[in-house]
Length: 133
Image 1 (spheres, rainbow, N blue to C red):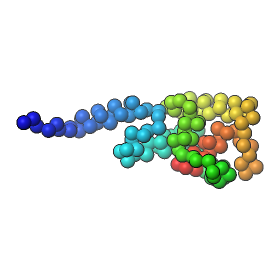
Image 2 (image 1 turned 90 degrees about the vertical axis):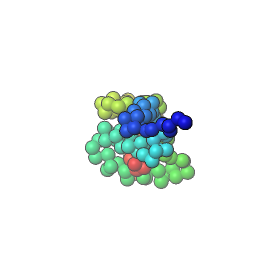
Image 3 (image 1 turned 30 degrees about the vertical axis):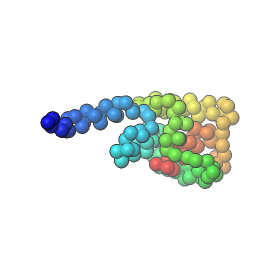
Image 4 (image 1 turned 90 degrees about the horizontal axis):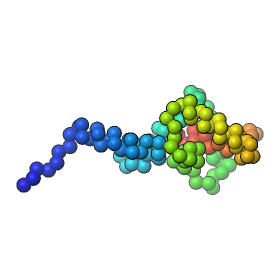
């Protein structure tokens, strides 16, 4: 009879590393199966790259979510709306991308008023993301 395959620590590490490379920049669905909350960690990294005090924007995010309570919102969904492709790894690239999107939102008139603030839709999505993370 053949002996059952054994799992080594090295083999397990390689398997997880392969999964990480395959799923880099995406929603992290495979990792949720393993119990890790990759989307929230990725969202926290994005928010931290924009400002070390990102938690301060949570009240605006909660206000926006309250205004749009009927709209289903998730960390995955917001990340997909903010970054319609792969989420950049470099903080400087994240900041550039967000700044460009916000400018374009204002140019296109894609703005929302939240607590007397006129905000670009990209900003409100970031604030909502902060409220959920």
